[in-house]
Image 1 (cartoon, helix red, strand yellow):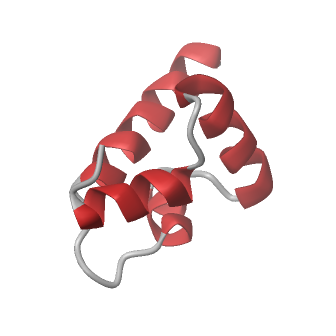
Image 2 (image 1 turned 90 degrees about the vertical axis):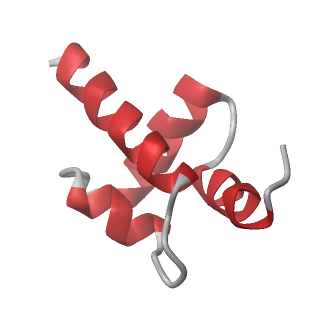
Image 3 (image 1 turned 90 degrees about the horizontal axis):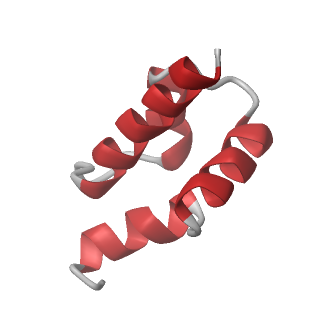
Length: 64
């Protein structure tokens, strides 16, 4: 199950990096099967060291 969760987190991370205007973290997370958004955000932060909302904002501004 952990492998599946990592694969889903990786997919969310990729989608956040190339999100279209208007897409939200919640919509992207749900698209990949995450229902509990607070649990998703905590797992994402542990795996990548950055909050999903920060990654989305950075991808939109082109900041590293």
